[in-house]
Structure formats: C-alpha cells, structure tokens
Image (tube, rainbow, N blue to C red; front, side, top):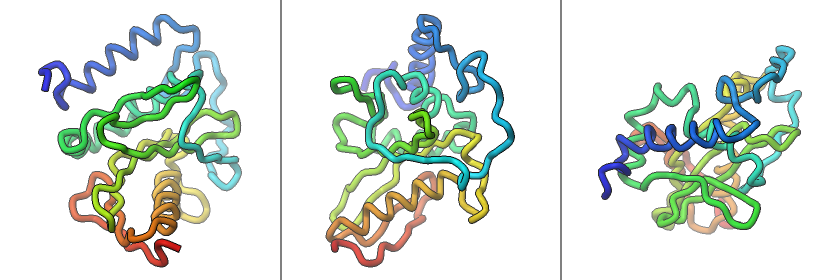
Length: 196
C-alpha cells in the first residue's frame, strides 16, 4: 500500500482534497453541515417533524455535503481508532461517481451505501455495510449530521434509524441472521424473519 494512502494518512489526504475543492466552489460549507450564509435552524430538532428520505445514491451536486458529512464529521474524533481499524480491514472509503449520481464505498469491496436525506435532498446521514458471510451483514461506517443526531420523542436519533433500515434490508435477504454494529468489537443484532 502506498504510504500516502495508509489508513493513518487517508483522513489528512481527504481533508486536503476537500479543502482544495471547497475553495474552488461557491457553496462553501461552514460547521460541516450548512452552506455559508444560511440561517441556523429554528430549534426544531425532532426527527418526527422532519421528512427523511432514504436513497443509495445522491446527485453529484451534493458532493460537498457528502464529503462534509462523512469525512469531516465533528463526532469522528470520538471513534477515530475504531474507524482506523475498519479502514485497515475493509479499505479506504471514497466518493464514487457514476453518471450524475454519487455514493460512498470501497470499490474493491462491494460495500453498500444508504443515505438519509432531508426534504431538500441534502444528505444528513449515511451508513455503509457489507456482507462478508452469508449469515452476516457488517455495518462498517455510520455518520450523521449533528442536528439529526439528537434523540426524537421515540428515543432514537438518526443513527439508530439508519441501523434499523439496515436491519429491514437484512430481513429481506435470505440467510442473514446477524448484523455487526460499527465501531464496537463483538456487538451484534439478531435478525428475525430473514429471507422472506
């Protein structure tokens, strides 16, 4: 592996690439989630009042939002060692483009991506997962915009909702019985009713 692309250096490399793109574009992001000049939210942080859509890809125009959300998430330092461990085993995720759509993945891995987008189509959450064994889905990475990480009245923030979406997917795949949770060694969810 090229030393510049090692797991320890990839976050620095991605940050340098992102900063150079950010300077070249008009839609400069501030605080990792809002465009410059945008007004702060009116304090409505409950997910029940927000229209969340789920998609495997987003328009290429959302590239800056995707990069801010995934590569420069303010909560990333809390799990940086676990992220490095996942990167060492699965490879370095990157933004992949086909036609006018993008997603995050590891090209050599077959990793799947699921975005949670707000009513404007802006990605506010993303989860990456793979199926390394017939009975197992592994959630490799998860990132959520800090405004959407807050708990809603049902007690689950967007991260939990994304994990539940992967559980729904797992139930539709024949043979999957477990989901490994991200950044926690040995944490699994059981999947009931899989393979309908």
